[in-house]
Length: 112
Length: 113
Image (cartoon, rainbow over all chains, first blue to last red):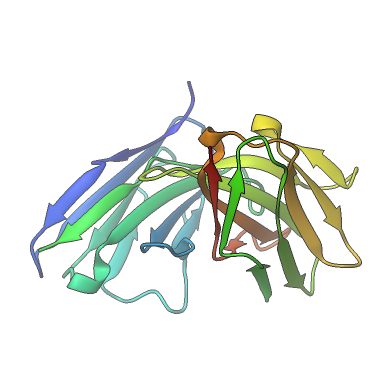
């Protein structure tokens, strides 16, 4: 089945130690998104790619970076995780802007 | 700019009772509307969407929603809920041109036996 896969499902990292979360898709969608979701809150968009065009949200901290080497893969890099970065990170894709998003299962990040 | 307001943060209901989860939105441009469901420690799954056409849309798991342009609402309904419907529900709106979705804060639906 075509899908969005996030690895790992659970990630524990040390305070200040760089960490990378990965997302892959078999849907061949043009758009890929990264969301941060804290407990009992709505998903918050960090950035998205339309093909290779990178779009950063104005309030996304510089600590968060992203790479999309090809259509299928997208990475979220957190350069120096703080305790406040502990959250569920959701990757999503859509065929084109504005249409429904297909979400991965998420990666729950714990910072110790 | 656009925004989404989910009017109820928590909705408790007994099994087999009807339920309505309310969603209002504001936008200066034409939008698409969505409802997603999220089970614990999972990603979001699309329940239904309104893109155009009939204002009553049917989705998975027996849910439906009605788009009301004059009231800028997109309320989600189910005539008879099950224990398995217990989850977090998010209403979302996306700008038809900009391609980004804005989510409401979510409604926790708890179905009690």
